[in-house]
Image (tube, rainbow, N blue to C red; front, top):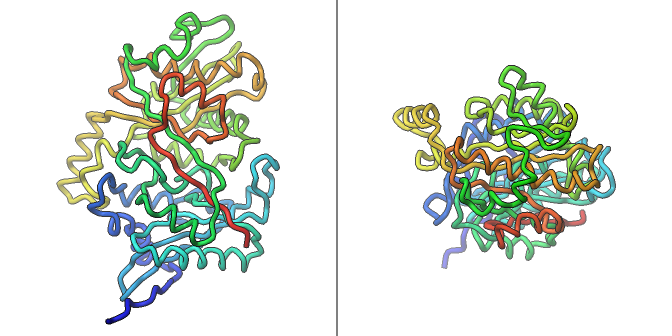
Length: 388
């Protein structure tokens, strides 16, 4: 009997190999139930050093696994210099390296890919490997453990169910699970009653609180408000890496064509930012049936759908509360107020569903708030750790 060819790992160099790396998930996962390919263009912004804000404070090496000359898997290894300054509560430090973008349908490729990433990190003085994050915890997060058949969502990675067991067999141990919840939108949805009606801010005021939307004339300023509140809220949370000004500006540029003023909820207290949430439309609604590299006709369809804003779902990607009120009764209430305000906008936004994630499995206050309305998460993603 002929033995299968061995797995060969090749470091990615140059535009052509990076293109292979970007396209690999849709090539190996194509046809698997529940998988929808993200746009190659979107992935290039995430991964290409010429476009990704990560490379202003980090370095990475990509690897592709081949068998018989055919790409069968991929992985990234990266170091983020921002971990030098984070708090001990994050579980990160200057000698924590990361892996990400782990995708394959070949179980034998998994340990070889993980060892390639570990060797690259070890050679640079790292003593621990954590992941997958692409490229840090502000990007795509974890291996999908549950939810393969759930609605595909922007910036949410998809993986086959067997991958978790193979990763653990390769010597990785669970570090953390993150959960995502699906909330129905609209005035009659249960989530609209997540806080008592008397506490909603609406378009008016609640005592010293007021609410506003995105200021289209000052998008950069509002992006900085969002970044400051987000970084302040989660600074002592497991896995936290701060958003930099460059990364926030890059994200705003990327989503600006599909961003509406009502996607941004800012609660102010006496004119000062107190809490913020940002929702982004789910690109899979308009591009999920076009493949990662649409034909000219596909691009034309996408353009029409974007102009018509034919989105049916969206995702809360950032939520933050001011440090000044963190730990107070108002600070504890603000996430509910922000979610309630999003629900109130159901008559204006075309979405029937909003995804809330990633919620750390250890974040019991947030889980209790959400699970009053949605008893169980729709998706679970896992992060792993290994000493080097």
